[in-house]
Image (tube, rainbow, N blue to C red; front, side, top):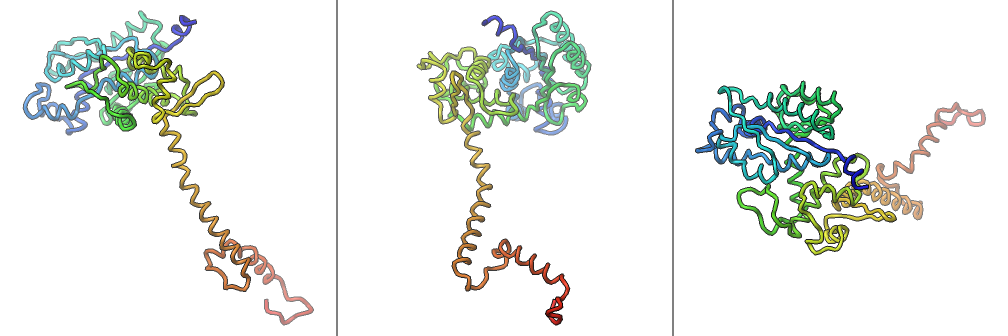
Length: 360
């Protein structure tokens, strides 16, 4: 049964045009063509703080790719002898990304798009179990590649920087996600969970050697957030789905090493962030914020009820004291509609023969 489950599980291949993403992010934050003007590739002088500000989190990209299935391979294409690219070594190595070296044949073209496209097509024929292809780039040169992958029966997902992604490329994909949205998702997850007790120096995206309860709690919330994005009609997620997503994010996860007898015991220990629902032998969960948002969203709907209660009280008071002066027009309007319609109907009828001088 385990083998059957593994053979039917989606498998994802991730291909990163490194220069495309890093340069696009830098220009997005610091202005068009800033990478070339600042000579940021040297990673020295005034470009150092700007590079840190525009630093791309490739861990967030791989986490998003893992929401589609197991990441079977991931490659990044660049000239790694460039100082600005070499600064990402720790982040990329910690996430087991295969680094493909591209020495530029000219000063204007690094050839990453051609090499990447050749590798993708080669992998599609060599690895028929690949179900999803993730292209991390925004160049329109990848449109034929996306179209060919779709013809070969693969689901093609694109990740690019807003403002530097070709609309024609987006149209050629099955799904597209902006890197800016991935950053916002990470910020939201960080706000929901406590900070880890210890942080890795120099690169906060690297995986910890040993999980602590705080980092495991953060991992649980991240997994729920990613898995929820693949469901349109229901926020509740099966426990096995959530655990599989956690293992994709960090294969070292083991609830027993954290002192819990089962995965559900670990989830119950995080009941401040997670809500649990049991249905027979099935266990479902969702982020508790979603359950809390429903009453918050419904709060404005209660206001009419309070106003209705006020109107009903005014009406009741008028009934108890019929001789009292009428309420202001706004409050009396609901109770006076029927009499006005009756009066209007009576006034529109002609005078009767018994009272010919009655005023209409």
